[in-house]
Amino acid sequence: MSRRLYQLVDLLVAALIAGTSTVIWGLVVPPAVALWIATLFAAVYYFSRNPWGSPKGAAYNDWIDELYERYLP
Image (cartoon, rainbow, N blue to C red; front, side, top):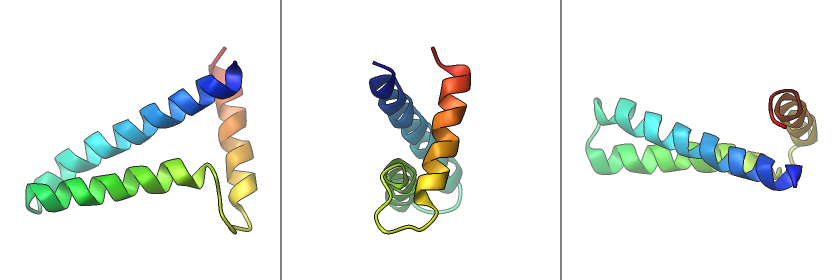
């Protein structure tokens, strides 16, 4: 059950990143570009949780999992 909760929190964090980035970048660039950049940032976070070939990816994931264990049931 906790793994599913972690995945849900990962999606919520990615959504937060996307929403915040859209608003911030929307002040500087056209809305379509802001949405593209925000989607890229959210995807980078979400897919970094499943690293492909990154030598430190597992260490980052362990750190995030420890953070989740500390604050989530």
